Length: 529
Image 1: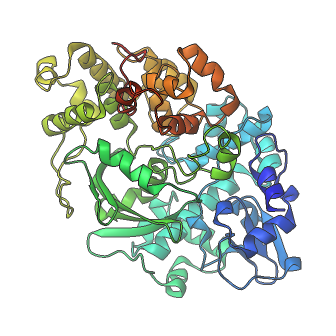
Image 2 (image 1 turned 90 degrees about the horizontal axis):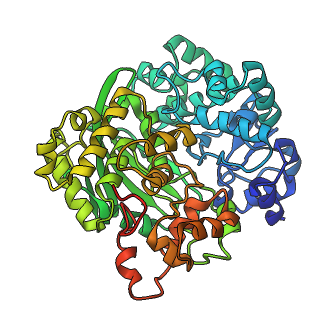
Image 3 (image 1 turned 30 degrees about the vertical axis):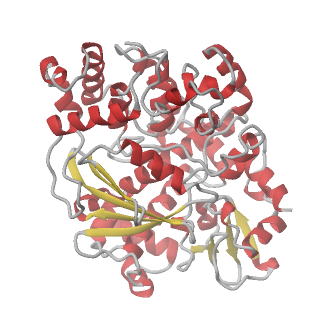
């Protein structure tokens, strides 16, 4: 029965919507607290007026008292309040990539823009702005969105903001005014009114009821928890970042498994800089995230970027259903992302056609020369990655002294100028085809680098760097065209297929060297500057 629900929820050709969920299968998944379905549906209990995640450990309600919804916004629109124990705001977000009919794709892409804080302007996503991005009218967007989700785009956005605020209230001791602004509300008055209307109590009362839990803000750090769906190969993810860690910017404590890094971001015209510390809790399928208080004003955006960095919102059941037969040993692999798209793009350019170790050395030199110093309480975190403005203004001589060849100097400066000017955006909400075209128009950036940036910075699950030599060897083909043809059956999850192919043990001994460079460039890739 659960298998039938998995097909309805995750199969790319499914036309099921909230009303069409397999109720008995959802009930069974809820009874067994199956974490694979966390965030894929919510259970609302008519006798209590509360809605929960499938992993909630409260006493199992009677079947006749349960209603099932795909999205939290649908449950709230039906009059239910979020559970204070399982906390629906901790659930992984539902994937929004699809190969279904055009109307469903459009609705899912609109939801994706709402879910991505970096996708739209500092004033927040309005229906008109989202419709403009998608090339449709406001009226058409509202119609197809309500047909798909059962709620309007504004109701969906309101639920997203309220759940973000609820997490900050429960997990931090931030003042309510700061919680309201960080969650996207224009004023504290509107925040309080929305909270009372949806949840029946004011924000301060919720904090008194729930208290500031085990993730309470202490000292100079704010701690929150983020959920993910199993299976998750945390060792592979941490090893990926450990091999590529830039001195001063990133550290990994092998004993505790804590991955830490610095971060700088600009929001609403203001620059914010600080540090992050991340640790997986496999027993609870959670990530413990500590954030410096200097990033408190942009905490929901930081959380969104960390979710992208570690691919916490991936839906393994959908991905594995398509890829397991070809890659049976990669069911727990995730696509590593980034908290800074510009940083990722620079590192990709720096590492073209050299090894991971050499790319790391080059990146560390760049950080030491152009990155600003920052004080943190974590040993080894001392620098911020250079800004686009700093690299755009760097002279060729200064870059040359770091060992960066002339061709890549031009690529770095062109990339930095485009990002600094605002003409090029590298984040999860960016227009993928337009961004790929803009990247490949820059000197020294070809299809491989553009696809790699799309895979990690744009979070495009169907990116496929067909010119990658290690990928071709893993697939047993001899050309980019053959690799692309072999990949068609893996859409829309080809990025995950690439990760699994890279982790496939190389067949001929000669492929070992190529496989060692899978992060930032391969000998013989198409991106020769």
